[in-house]
Length: 218
Image (cartoon, rainbow, N blue to C red; front, side, top):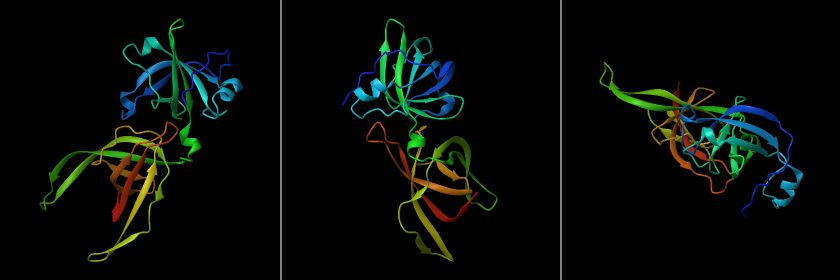
C-alpha cells in the first residue's frame, strides 16, 4: 500500500547537517551533498502505516536548495558521516517549507550486513613480458555485505584440484556494479561477478552473485 508521510511535530535526533544523497547505481563520489535534519518516526505514523513502517525507521528533511534539478525518489540512499546507509522508503514534498520529507530504514542492520567487500573496476588490459594478458584494476567502492555460499563447492580437475565456490552477497546499495568488475573480500579472496539481482520490494537489498575460483587471491 502507498503511505503518505505525516508532517507531525517531532523531536530532532540530529540537527542540520550534510549527508550524501545517492541515487541508484551511482558511486558514492558522485553523490549529491545535501543539508538534512533527522527525526525519530512517531508512534502515530507507524500505527497508521499498517505495518509498512517500523519503530526503528527514521524521518529526514532534505533541503530543496541542494537538489534544484532532482526529484528525490524511493530506493535512493542517504549516507551521513557515520557511514550508515539509510534507504528511502517514501517521499513527500512540502511546498510551503520547501523541503523533502523522507522515511528511511537501515537495511544493512536489518539484514545483518556486518562484513565489507571492495569493488574493483578494470582499467585496461596489457601484455606482460611473457606475452600474457594482464588486467589492471582500480578501486571503485567499499560496501557493507553478507557473504553466503549458494551451493556446495565444486571441485574441478586441472593440473591440481581447484575449488570453485558460488556466493550470493546482499549489499547495502548498488553503486553501479558491472559484470566486468571484481570483488575483493576482507580475507583477500577475489570473486568474479556472475550476476546482480535488483530488489523486488522497497525493503529488500540488491544481491550480487559471484564465484571464487580456486587459487585466486590478492
